[in-house]
Image 1 (cartoon, rainbow, N blue to C red):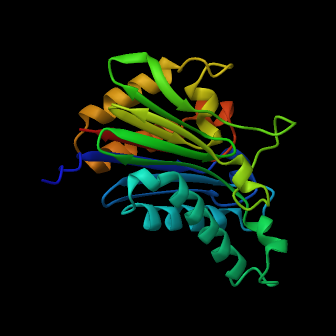
Image 2: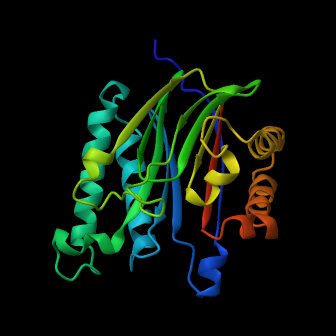
Amino acid sequence: MKTKPPHIRVVSASVTGLQHRHQSLPCQDYSRHARGRNFVAVVADGAGSAKYGGIGARIVCTTLCDLLKNISFKQAEEKIRAAIGIARDKVVRHRLNRGKDEKNINDFAATVVGVIHNGGEGLFFHIGDGAAIALNDNDYDNFIASKPENGNFSCETFFFTQQAWSENLRFTRYSSAQTIFLMTDGLTNFSFSNDYQNIEKGFIEPINNFLSEEKTKQKAVRALTNTLNTPRAQKLNTDDKTLVWAKVK
């Protein structure tokens, strides 16, 4: 007998950061989720220095969700690598990549934070900054996190378009989580202590409690968007902000 997949509620929101607003630029974050044999969600942050970073973020999110939702979970790491390779191929062939080769694909640079969840276990996959959290609702001190990764400098990170993308792809497994958070870099300083050893409960816990209780999707999305868009939040971090919250039942 086939096991019934768990019911998963999802609420997500993206807001444009002050830096892009002042430059009259759109939000370059993107998120997507899909359900099949697996639940898959991905957030991506298009690099501010990349001409088509927002397009790269959209391509990698949609490609990974489409290709991973029905794979065998036992083969997840192999399939994730293959799916990122396909996303890179799409960028190579994109109409805005005039050379139609890998030379210019960094124009589409984006970080990747994703999850594939099956039954009672899950796998985070991650290139660059941003973060992911898996936790049980009554135990915020014992969580599993996929933390940001930067290069030699704090402002330098890694992207799926780089030649060494596979070397910078990280996997983190978890089990028995009730709640999953995926976020871009604009929210990591709200969500963790400075050393990333603890969750900032004053941010994570109220969001989790409210979204768990609010049954109307439209109200939940509006409330989450407003939270990410407060003047204080925009002042503390001027980057674009995307958060995906998923409740596993």
